[in-house]
Length: 125
Image 1 (cartoon, one colour):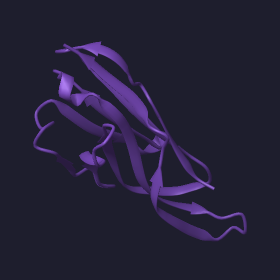
Image 2 (cartoon, one colour; image 1 turned 120 degrees about the vertical axis):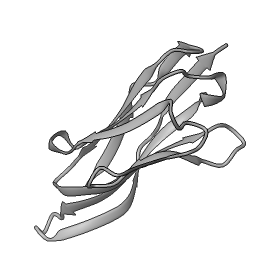
Image 3 (tube, helix red, strand yellow; image 1 turned 90 degrees about the vertical axis):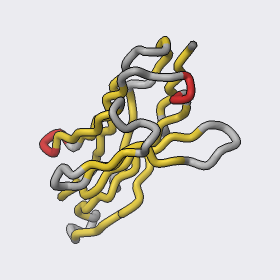
Image 4 (tube, one colour; image 1 turned 180 degrees about the vertical axis):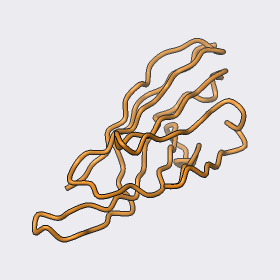
């Protein structure tokens, strides 16, 4: 099957930067749109940024101008560069990907909603 794994989270002071990575693995044929979401306890998961297969990007208003999403299709990896971090950016960050892959029978299959386990980002004031 396929899965995605996030990394790069940690503790940073306000105004600092982090770069998150989302690496997809499995018998991947292609990766479509990928989104970075974030969630704090007691609140709904919210979208931070998305990137389409062609590179078109969208950002939540709260992160626009500070976060940059990018992808390296050769490495099946999507990044989220986070600059000028604020305490309100503290959350668990999740990657979600639309993946076309080869099944165990050799057929093409698609999972449009592959979630990772998340990576914690904590911004101190």
